[in-house]
Image (cartoon, rainbow, N blue to C red; front, top):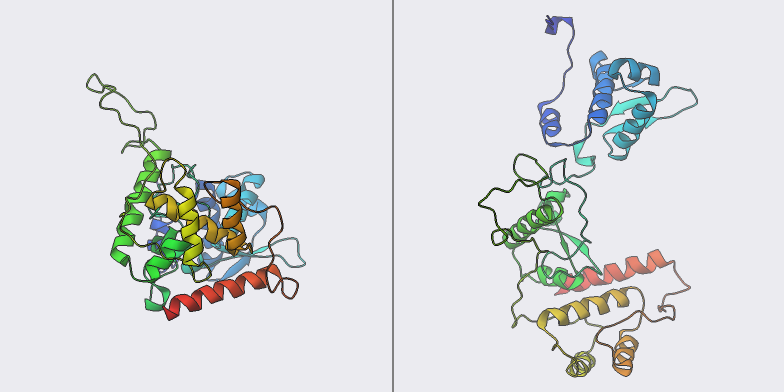
Length: 320
């Protein structure tokens, strides 16, 4: 019978790290390799140590290819730091700064697959251009963890910064939407059984198909146009859309605007895009075949130009 005693050696780990271990999900192989590193470092009162693959194999019982795979995953998640110098044996260190670990969602258990849905705005459903928004702003002490982030389109993101939606509303929206995503991708019951067992009381009438979340929109909700888009030009497009069926709904108008914003961010002229849509009798906007031009094109790199545009947007939102 095993009889471990503290007097024979023990590992000192802060309670905060232990609590983070309780919440963090990694594979069994990764846990085995991680504990081997902790044993060889913290177990000997060291921050890092050179550990050969043969030592990992003895401690974990895993094959070397599996150990290498687990080490790479732990490194990519920033849980461990690997130093490779001139010697054949790498040095390994456990990264106790868990705020730097790769963020994982609390909402999706480990047996769930990655969502098959294309990322979309949690408020309007638009998916062609999305951005992350901190529910509790970083300037107000909000964290950078995934639990404090919500996916929004550029238009809804602007409305949030204008104060149209409260943090409480966004958090509720995030929770309900992610629960629906889980149900769509993983029809798994509470005990983790993937196949539903139907009884005599389960009929076609009682089985309902899950549908992607659709945000109800207020018809009277104002659509805010960007500064670079004239209201007259946008009204011309809306007038053009009246010849098509079905009519241009509030949500369809917002989706078209988001698509135009995305094309503008890529460097296309919105006036040309709208005029082409009207001239060709299109219901929506399409990316022109000609390459986008930007006033700063040729003077700066594409990344620098994008950073300048993002900064302009940030300044404009602060002034409002």
